[in-house]
Length: 355
Image (cartoon, rainbow, N blue to C red; front, side):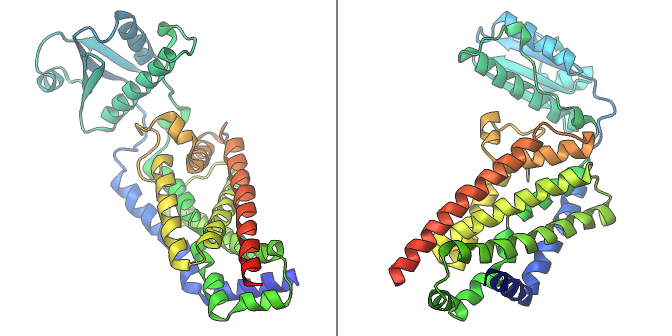
């Protein structure tokens, strides 16, 4: 019975072939646009040395903090020089500085040029302050040992590879759209009543939706990824590991989408809620602003499954490995389990309500 339902639901999905085609083509078009727009920002860092100035106004920052920041800056190929007087923008122009930092009490202002190196300086200062805040909240760490995360792959990543990966992931989280044919026809042809007559359990009913949507959406996502390789030359690093993470990501997205549909019992409501949730996850996960230079707090990023997946795939692309591969798959698996349980429970409640 379950095999028949799965096969039938796949046929229903292919009747709405336009949804599937859009699901495959749209990320490729978006990747082409974004990779071109941000080519300068994400250009390869063959020369990373930079010089920046700073000034201390007030007594909000301690000398040992400046010493720690200067040391951390040197480890990240940034030279910090103090300029007690002068207009920051004029000093940048006259001394060929990448940027200028003004420390005022407990806050700071960054003047940065329009180059990618200016963004690196902003990322460095923000990351340093995050570490400093962690130390102030009780982490046992000497001020002089404060360091800044400096991803190895940052020197070799470019806009084509970065957006070629993260946008595939982002659209993969809209997997429920590829399965719209099942959900729309389910109501149109009153298929639920047939399920009740056949005494189909909520688990089997759930699997009859989850499996075909996850399979078709995974195939569509992998085809889109293949197109990025053929048309744009995107590097995916370790293909087998990347495929595993992508499939796990799509499975999580499918489970989440079905869960939302089980709660709302409306395709329109599902689209609105799914788009909102995925947009938020993508915003903090680096789907729009490159997470390498993102100013979002690290603990917020780590709460987002898309961040783990994006970072794992990006590092695999550049280095062939990633410490985030395990957390990406594990996070996706947790979402599949939790979302499936909730969807099945709501399906059972709805079935009892109609009995």
